[in-house]
Image 1 (cartoon, rainbow, N blue to C red):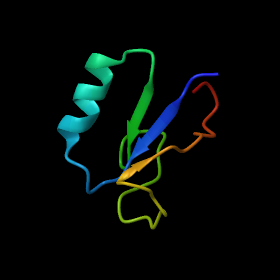
Image 2 (spheres, helix red, strand yellow):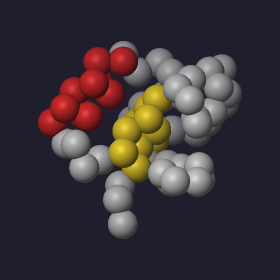
Image 3 (cartoon, rainbow, N blue to C red):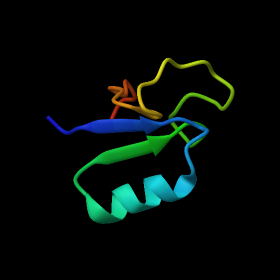
Length: 59
């Protein structure tokens, strides 16, 4: 099972870039990207990074 992370919209985009670069096996998405919740959607998060199982088909 692959770990999947959804970054909150308030997390700087460079965190996602670095996570993707350093750990290419992780699935990292950010709020507002295609196939993710839109910005300004309330999501309860822990430490600004959500360990959120994406329910998008194919992810």
